[in-house]
Each structure stands twice: as C-alpha cells, then as structure tokens.
Length: 65
Image 1 (cartoon, helix red, strand yellow):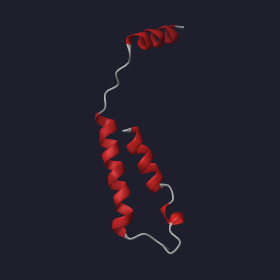
Image 2 (spheres, one colour; image 1 turned 60 degrees about the vertical axis):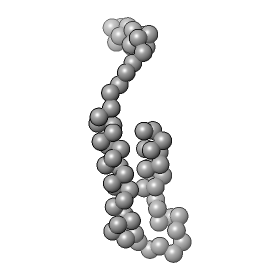
Image 3 (cartoon, helix red, strand yellow; image 1 turned 45 degrees about the vertical axis):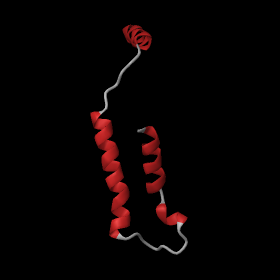
Image 4 (cartoon, helix red, strand yellow; image 1 turned 90 degrees about the vertical axis):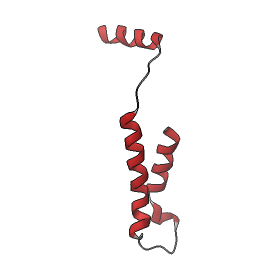
C-alpha cells in the first residue's frame, strides 16, 4: 500500500512539469490519478493496525507516564 501511495503522489505531484508540450491535462488524464487516490483511500479505510506485543506494551507504558 505504501508503494502505491508513493506512486500516486509522484503521478499527481506536478504532471505538467514533466511534459514540455502539455499546456493542460485532458479531463480523462486528470481524473485517472484521482481514481487511484480513491482506491488508496478505500484500502487505508479498510486497513487494520496490528501492533506487536512488545511495542504495544512499550506504548502503553509511555502513555501511562
């Protein structure tokens, strides 16, 4: 998921600076990265965090002060 997110960022960051003859993007070309971000957002929303027991204990101790 992280690699996909990095790819989305790279594609969306500034696409016109990478093409010398492009003054603006077509509607389809502009919407495709947004669709990829939508997929990424769905994956993030559905993700579950699994914390290793030793890290969980350390985090609990740090929060307790």
